[in-house]
Image 1 (cartoon, one colour):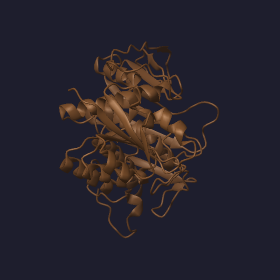
Image 2 (cartoon, one colour):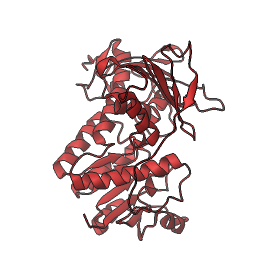
Image 3 (cartoon, helix red, strand yellow):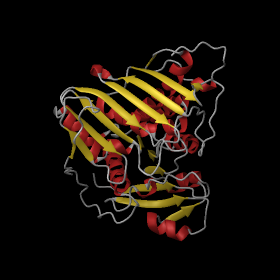
Image 4 (cartoon, rainbow, N blue to C red):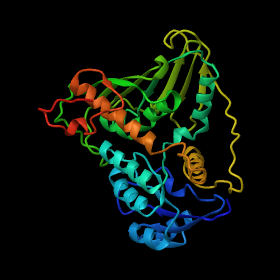
Length: 379
């Protein structure tokens, strides 16, 4: 389709909750695109940001930008889910498609509403769940499907386990890890979890003080067991204060004939252990070569961004969103995926508070930590 895509960037640098993952640069250098405007209430060093984004015009208010510029796609670069809901609603009501930083929202009822609005107004919502676009994890998925580790048995993921370890880590970094499990194996059917605070079981009234506004968050130690389709089991764990000088965040998939692992450091290598034994018995890893075959015809070579992982995969997310709009399909990382991950997070809290396995998807859309003590939790 011969068209020029009009892109509007919502990247308000006046607050502390920036994306930090270069989402605002996703469309830079892509063919057939024009960044028509940047919405940012902060005017300090504005010209530098305008030049980096290649925006033609500036607005202090995103609603004014939406109404005057009428972009085809809005990029929502804040990492604060509290910012996204009003922005996505405004975009949907104007027929503007969205590329949104994660988490899309921290409230299941809001996620339901945003999806209903997207369906009603026939817009696409792409969410920056970048593992779904990343070569390393696409290669992992292909190798699993081709039988490189035999029958997949267990998916294991950890957060960063720094000062945010536990509930905050679950929401911020666990979103990526849990979505990756869904990407590899499909949405889980149930979750069983243990969440503790200083060694005691989590109570409904507990709250953690978080670095970012994330909604209800609690716990300094999270352990969750997921039941994925085809008898694959999943484990997610985050404990506060374990981070030292090396990144702990990562994933492993153990199968009947091997293990695939990725650590979320700057290199993000895919490693393979060709063993049929559990990893504590034998786990000699070798690096797996990654061969990129995808191209974006006419795109400039990227010469920006602080980490190539974000530069490349934001571009693939942006390119995929344009193709999804043209083909009238869902983006490869979309609002339904974001909602499914949020259901797992809510399910973890629900399981701890109810003391039992919780079926997914959840029937109850209220966050478990916001329910009344006397209510019966029916998930």
